[in-house]
Length: 225
Image 1 (cartoon, one colour):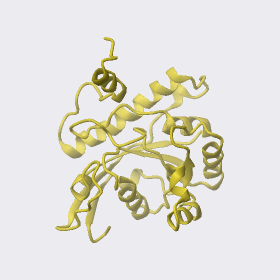
Image 2 (image 1 turned 90 degrees about the horizontal axis):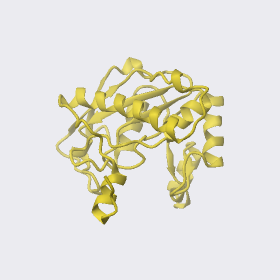
Image 3 (image 1 turned 180 degrees about the horizontal axis):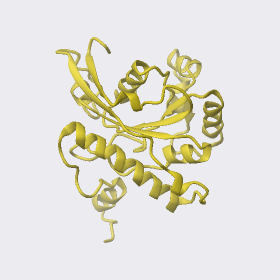
């Protein structure tokens, strides 16, 4: 990965060097976890990820995921499942970090802007009482395009990364973590990630964030205005 890309990290000093926290970047390429894992490593931390449980059944790869402390999540499930919750508690006890993509999957926004987020990242942060640190990166799509499995190793790419300030979730702490509260907190996180990406791209994101459920309903004729 060092041969394939150079990393220009802006505000790397905002990345916590110790203690437990949730690291939440944007997501638009299959290789993003490796890229942000490299960034975390370069900034002095060993990353942990929420990963599909099916990956842990693969020969060799599954063993590596388990031994490196990655967290299995059942497909179609959520971080509310018992194993992810227990794993999050262990992270806090050990002062480790976990990378959680708030979008849950690759963005479906045509221009690769962050889409509507899911509640996994904020739920862990709020339930465990740990910070959530937003980040954005740009340039990974030159290394591997969205939905592609092909790596473009040469010429060497430049990946821009910007680390944000820890997000203040104080107004949500102590509240019932119902759907409305989690969605509100998630929107705050997505706004922060989008602002960081705007800085990297020197562009302005669309006023309305891409909502996959709305577009799916439109495509199937089930959308009601």
